[in-house]
Structure formats: structure tokens, C-alpha cells
Image 1 (cartoon, rainbow, N blue to C red):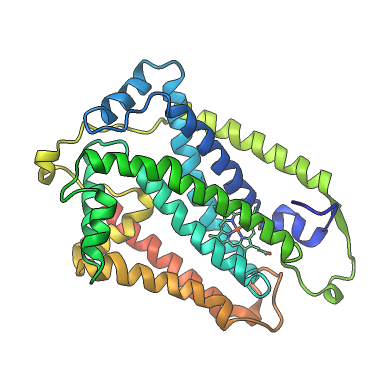
Image 2 (image 1 turned 90 degrees about the vertical axis):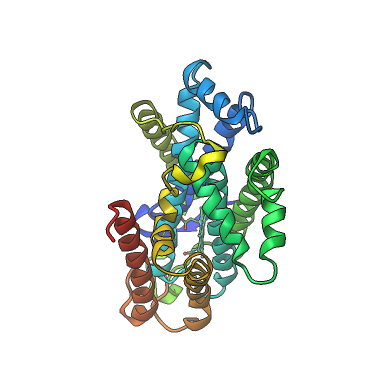
Length: 334
Ligand code: HEM
């Protein structure tokens, strides 16, 4: 997908931070390790938890593969957030890259749901609570809520149909959307004339970097990332809590995945329609509006350009709010 020669301005780590590439590598690793887990995971109500316990304790290299799957998925979310921040702070969303910005927002949503649906497949005590809270939020949606709930949960209450639906979406529907979306996103970078950069007139040097050099850097990144993830997986494998008891969910602790902690905090204090839908959608609309409000003028292709301080301040404010709410939830501050 790379042209033979690429402008040096945007080919270096100091411009991209390498985060888009790291998200691609993490997505590939998640898919490969997920395919391996499919040989042992049992998508049934009674079999899901025991099959994971088996993968962790009996299957050869099972714990390592499950841990790699988990950590690669978390790296994908973190890399995607930093990647989005890099786009905002360098003005990379401006036309003609606005279409790719919207595709990126779609990928952001798909990745979060992809990750959440995997967390639910653990079927341990805390993930079942997250599932219950998440699916009950669907009912809050005026008009279509109860139909959407039935489509996603598969029945009036959580049960066997729910496990199978989440599994099918996780390994098939969302994987197809995620990988297909990433492929299209990368192809659009090329169609849009490569990465954003200041006008040529402002970049007098006009230096280029060859495709082979970039490919070599990506290979090194992939090797370093894989090595780090293997170490992380060996020393800090993900938990598997006590098994879920669908008859006694109320006594168990709610533990949303870390990237939903801010919403979990909001759910304690404001009505769930606002906490689960209106506030997150308002954040998403704000992001979607960026390329519509800030279309032209100087400052593209440069980090923290003063001319574009308003969108950068709005984005930094949003990130800070999410971070503070997540910390409040993590430390249970009331
Ligand atoms: C699965 C998640 C994603 C992957 C794998 C991915 C991958 C990439 C890669 C490899 C690039 C080129 C290199 C780079 O800029 O680092 C890129 C560029 C871009 N991405 Fe993403 N991306 C993802 C999510 C997003 C999100 C969430 C957004 C924004 C909401 C976004 C918007 C863009 C834009 C606008 C560009 C062009 C930037 C420029 O020209 O400066 N991407 N993406």
C-alpha cells in the first residue's frame, strides 16, 4: 500500500508516533491468537468458563496464547487512542483526509465493542455483571431499545443464546468489520495522497524515504512489540475470576473493562439514558464535527499548531474528563 517514495516529513516516528502501525500489528496478533483459542473455547453457557480454565491450566501454551490475545487487544485500544490524539494535534483530519477520519471513528467503535464482547466471553462473575449492565442499557433506548435488546441478547434474559450471539459477533462479525475496516482505512491513506504534511512550499527540503526503509522500520516495530507482549503475557497473564452464577448476579461486583470505567462512574450518579447513551454520543459527535468545523487555513501537518488551538483544547478537555472519571471509578471516589 506504500508508494515507492514517501515524504520524509511524515514518515518518521516523531510525526506518526508509529501508533497506527502498532494498532495494525496488534489487530493481526489478536486475530491469530483468537483463531488458536477457537480450538478449545466452548461457546455454551455451561462450557465457556470451564473451557477457559482448561486453556489456562491444561492446554499446552494455552495460558500464553490467551494472555497474548488479551494484551494485544488492550494494546490495540491504547494505540488507537494515542493515534487519534496524534491526528488531532497534527490536524491530520482536515480534507481530503476527513473521510478517513470518519472511517477511523467507525473503527474506534468497532474496536471497543470487539474488545467488550471478548471480555464478556469469559463468563466469570465480573464480566457477567458488565454484560448485564451493558445489555440493560440497550433497553433504555427509546423506540428501538427492546427490539435491539432481543436481537443482541437472543432472549428475554441472559442465557445460552446470549453466549452464542456474543461469540459469533466476536469471532466473525466484528472481526470482519474490524479487519475489513482497517484494510480500507490504510488504502484511503494512500488514496488521500499519503499522510498529512504542510504545503510543499513550506517544506523546502523535499526529502523522501523509500518504501523498503519504512517496511524495515515496521518489521522492527513488529518484532519489538511481539517480544514485549510475550514478556508481559508471561509475567502478568489476565485473570479469570470465580465462575458466574446467573441466578445470583445481584451479589457480584460490577467491573467494566478499563475503557468503560468513565461510563460506569457516570451510571452511578446520573440517569442511565444520559450516562450510557447521551453523554458518550455527545463526545462522539464532537469528534465527528472536528473536520467540519476546522477545514482549512494554516497549521496542518505540524504538532500543536497555535492556529488550531480550539479543536486541540476541546479534544484535550474530552480526554482529561474521561481520564478523571475513570480514575474516580477505579479508586471508588464518590
Ligand atoms: C483499528 C484502529 C486503527 C488503525 C489500525 C489505524 C491505522 C492507521 C495507519 C497505519 C495510518 C497511517 C500511519 C499513521 O498515521 O500512524 C493511519 C492514518 C490515519 N488514521 Fe488511523 N487507524 C485506526 C484508527 C483510527 C481512528 C480511531 C481515527 C480517528 C478517529 C483514525 C484516523 C486516521 C487518519 C485521519 C489518518 C491519516 C492521518 C494523516 O494523514 O496525518 N484512525 N491510521
